[in-house]
Image 1 (cartoon, rainbow, N blue to C red):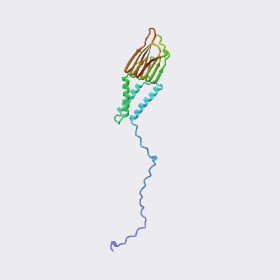
Image 2: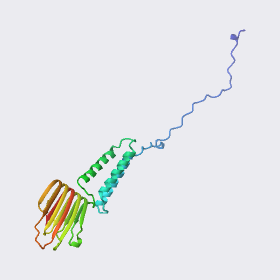
Image 3: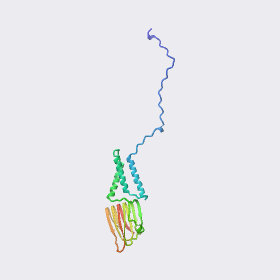
Image 4: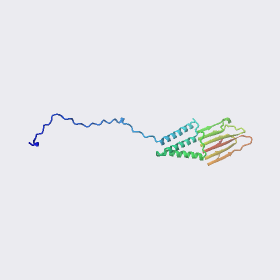
Length: 236
């Protein structure tokens, strides 16, 4: 008998190993479990710009509300130095258009202050002084930005020369004088000077006026200046 004629063995009744099923992937975590993407760090340009503007704003507010005496010129100088150092340190980190614009503005302001002799001292805002006697009178009055009004109509000069100095950086300077002889000298880097109805205006204004001065009487001497703005002297 050949091998091809042999009967095949019957199938075995013993069970074989069960088929292996593919493992299921674990369920995905809920969306709220997913970690939020990390926020990019705040650029140094925005940080420094915000700090500089915040400091200038706070100091300006303190000056306007008369909480402290603020001289804006050193504040602007310091802000320009901080901006320049930041641009120097971060020159390789990317664009700094905001700081460059701020630096240009600060440079223009400081250049104007130098060109027109703007002396930013004495605070900011609106100030009014009304001395009632020579003892109440200050030798000089200063204001950086705003309107400065000095009412001298209650002053009795007697037979002496009473000299008053006043200076405004940017804004308006107004002096009310009593009915006494007046020797007034007004200056304006850019603006107008009006003394007892007579005026001069333009760049680098230097205007003086003296009213008749009878012998034996006192007089009032005024030295007034404004960097950019207007000087006005009127009679009572």
